[in-house]
Amino acid sequence: MAGLLTLGDAMCSFNPAYGHGMTVAAQQAIALAAVLRRHGAASSAMSRDYYAAAASAIETPWQLAVGNDFAYPATSGPRPAGTSFRNWYAARVARASQQVPDLKDTFFGVLQLVVPPQNLTSPAVAIQAIRRGGRAPEPVASRVS
Image 1 (cartoon, rainbow, N blue to C red):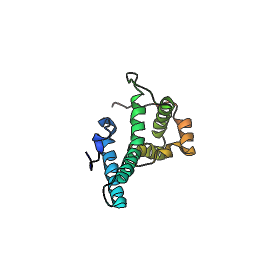
Image 2: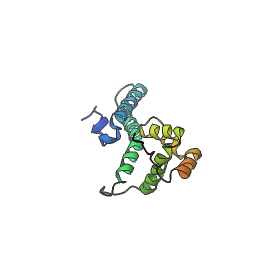
Image 3: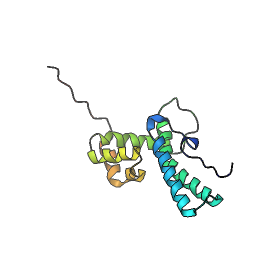
Image 4: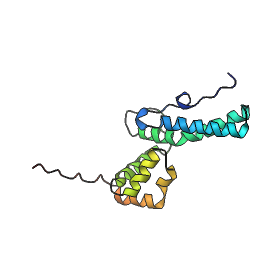
């Protein structure tokens, strides 16, 4: 039907465990407002611009979700290229972030969609991931008195 657009779960629904659905819907609403301001009225050009902006809002969280899903052997379907490497790297960053506070802020900021994902590939992050992301730190033994 002419004059209608989709956003939020009607366009792309996420596993609620990742916590991305509401953020992406809000980003799409912001994109819609910007496109409407730019175009002034509904039109096919406005729709194209909106859907391009909405797709951009979906791209990163979708890659995060799909990549994480493929960390589980029971996940079926076509595995996107580079998924194994991204999961290997993400695991190293996650383990290193347990020891490096700044890295923790970056890692969780990306997962929460408030830090650009490119920050995880900076040389400083990559070095920490390689140096400190090999094994999970040993748990601290608790004392029972």
